[in-house]
Length: 566
Image (cartoon, rainbow, N blue to C red; front, side):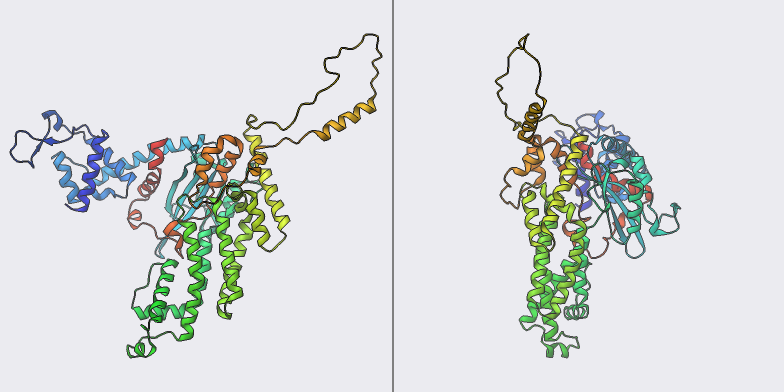
């Protein structure tokens, strides 16, 4: 049986199990001597509801990578006719049903987002179809009440849509995003925005229209810019600049193995160079032998440069893997990984030869720029990690050049201001015991004597009030109690989402703040995709579809799990 037929048959059995079709399961026929023959349990079971079947297949297409045109596949038709010889489902019918399912699903997702009490972060990724056309993928990021991270695609379209006449300048329009957010009813919920670099004017346009002149209740005091910088992109650019320094040597190395140019993933490049170094050290690429084969061979000095670059980038790769392949990647883990990058490059600038030192210094300069722009946000999210809190912020500030005390105070001030804003927006009943102690008064319960002069010595009264106010302990907040508790022991498998889910009831207001901050995407891509050195390629099957259908499938495929829960 072909792969296509197995896929459809598996889906069909699942669909029958959840009642999507009015047919009863097939069972072996007791009237047949042939074990391979099947029959329905009754003649009535032969009835087939074509609309339900069409709906089921459309939902299947909207939740998997199966294209609508599969209905034209010979294997699919063979399988479908096993259930109903007269079945007649066309591609056009499936596409129409997919669009209907999209509109129905969109209403449910919109209702959830409108009623969602937290903040929502936006990401806009630019996907490439070779060098021919750019595509936009707009997504919403948030952590819902059960502390599950969500990423829902809101819109997918070509960046050069001929129907969009908002501006003749490609880089000076918002691509209709503001209107889109208004239609979704979430414009006032947007806290941050992250997108592919090179479109700064778009980010500025969105910032001015979304934030306007209002004071952002939860984030206005935090970010110098509405636009969050992509960490994955910064690392890729940093590594690519190092490779550019030995570009000619890399070309020679690739020529030695006669390998085709790999995908634009910097981890592939480092793997190729490390393998070539290993073979060279074993004498595989001798200059004499390569000259006979008329292949350019790197000189010993060039191999030494490759070795130095591999040492730097190899260390960066190890930290990047630990960061981007984290199972539940949240904003709190970025600061300490960037700190690791910084330590690696700082050591390289002190221990390496002139050529490698120059590369390390250039990489460190790019990292330092990103650090300066993003430090406040990353420090606040790190403080919301119970393994770090303010202790790590103090530690990292002491290790990095600059006024450590001023940096710590800036972070603490921002956290306190953010928390105070949440207290006002989401008032909660006191959940912590008061530190104030009751004081006994000798005059308690005394009744005034009728004939006694009621003169009050005001000076003495003012003095007692002054004493009482100065002795009154300061009332502690959730934030104070959280930061005063010891930090948790380090664990690589630790999940901030799980911790806040189980402990959040103790810090009802602070947990709301943590939920909004931890959901901010610091990198557009994670896992394997984080190693791309240029915009990721768009799914070619998707762009062959009509624009409205492509948008519908991109959205519903990201909504599939959410629709089950909402």
